[in-house]
Length: 366
Image (cartoon, rainbow, N blue to C red; front, top):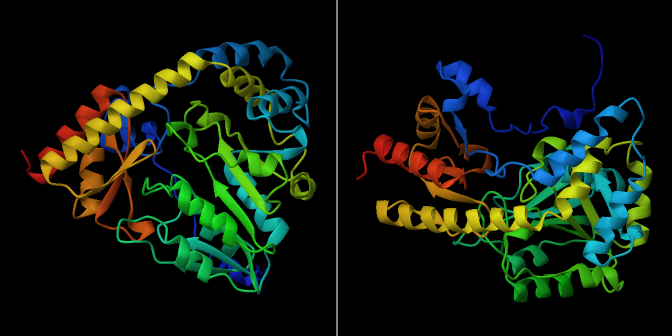
């Protein structure tokens, strides 16, 4: 083939999602209903019932293009967050917002600062636009070294990505450390705070006021409807930033990137307080169970502030494969430099028990 591709695509890492239930069932001769998925940090309670009803109502209008500005949804979301609609940018999942950042700020010769064990999409976006990734070693407890990340900034740095809580470690950067970061990031660097799991926190660090009041114009917050709202299949995320930043990102956004079903479902899910409360309660119960069970079994793990737990199982690829044979899908961590670890999402109480039973059997633990 004589086609010439952009040279940086040769080494571009590829994001590998968790295996679907149907694929695992087919590969191992299982019935799909026998397979549980604890791999992708999804909501085990399913989508909001209010969202399901709202989405059903729009099906008869699918011959029409969606509202390209998502006017109704964006205004309701702005009201919930107490920001202006001009502070919001919508994406086909929050991953698309991260890609917008690459389009707007990155090119060969620029740098991106991240923490070790960061979300896999940050290095992918960096490589996609030919920029240089600067990875700062994590602390011994797997948390981000904020002082180290600030020291890594150079005149070539354009973006810093930090998830809080972090995926895949579940670690939380404290309010004091976040304040230190805010104070230390220079004006030529866009600080992207990925808050995909913020709704699971009892007392989150609220950075919306910095955007709302224009105190920190080089801050972008990203959030998602894939986690606590249970709408991962719709692919809807959003960013909150200064209007000047949003205006630039809007130039990159494709028309109609948020479909009609997603807009209707997310609008309803925003106000489903019962579903959100039930999800939080299930998650707290599941985290407590997993932390206690891993401790009792003598398995090293990272105390999580999200909806999953990172646990050390030894031969991660082998344990992952043997769990799949038992109809339990988890996430191997070799791609994150953590080959001895698995990430296990919080499921329903019954799913959590089944996963731990499989681990006990595979590892020969009592």
